[in-house]
Each structure stands twice: as C-alpha cells, then as structure tokens.
Length: 211
Image (cartoon, rainbow, N blue to C red; front, side, top):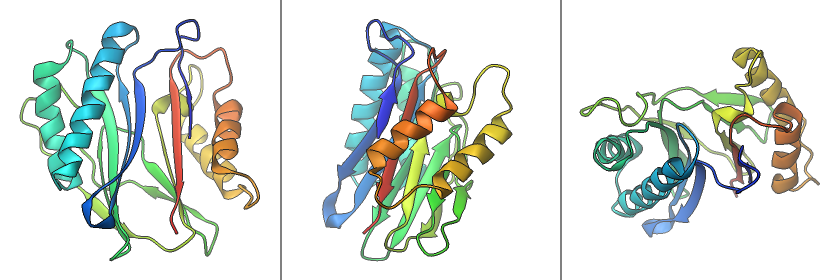
C-alpha cells in the first residue's frame, strides 16, 4: 500500500484505504476518494471510512453497503461527493464479491497466467448526488497467489494524459511485478512511474496477495 496526498505541506487528503478482518474469516477491502481537497474533504473521508467499517461488520454485501453509504454521504457530508470501491473476500468459497461507486476498476493479477484482469462489474454512481441510488455487485473466483490492486483516480487521471492509455500502462507494470519485490515497494514504484510529483491529486494504491 502507498498513499501520497497532493497537499504535501500538511500531509492531508481525501483518499483512503481499508483492510479489515470480518467474522467468519472474511476480509473487507476498500479504497475511496472524496472529491476535493482540504479539511472538509478529510473530515468526510474519516466519516465514510468509519461508516464503511461499521456496515461491513454487520455483514452487508457490497451492493447494499454502497447503497447505505450513499444515503450516509447525502446526509453527513459537507456537500462533497465520493467514489469508492469495496470488496469482501471469503476464503471458504474462494470468492471475492466487489462493487464500485463511480470508482476506477480494480485490477486482478492472476498468479497462474500472470495476466491482469479488470474487475469492471458491479458498477454504480458516485456517492452523494442521488439520494436513492441503486448499486450492483459482481464476483470473481480467487486462486492462491492472485494479487488484487485497488487505487484512486489520481494514479491514472493526470492533466493532458489519456486515462485509457494510463490504465493499460498500469496493467503492464503490474504484469511485470517480480515475486521478490514487496507489494509496498511495487505500489511505490507504480505511483512514482504513473503519477510523479508534483501531484494535482491524491494518490492511493492498495495491493493484496491472496493466500
């Protein structure tokens, strides 16, 4: 995991990540981005992160969790919007359930083939603007050694650059990750290559290897 706020002076930003164990040996993963900068964005980020944790512990699936967070955002935010991707992994079934609220697609690096798959299902609108929004979810079967990469748009959305090309470059860089390199170092290199400083936006990358 690595996180680089655009505001390097204060070290604060509206991006966040989460990785939390759940009952029944499951795991909750999330990466989000509150639109905007400054203290108001940080306050919204803290509230959304805490609310997401509370809902995940209750056992809500991604689609329902996102719907509840959308309602929460409409009531509790400073008028700001947020994008978010969440995933819940069940090692018993080997299934990863995931959903997205206006967030860039997570990437799954397959251990067997080394290929990277875009998790483009389970889409829904950004959190906040629509009071009663509906969200989908999707699922994918995970194999031991697979790596999930979740990130915010600051990694691929830079002024004057094509997002699709940046996403394709991201996939190629992840394909080239070596087994002897730690995920923290790999995430750092990914960020430095795709979003070098000075940055106009926060950048957050979370990578997880499934065992």
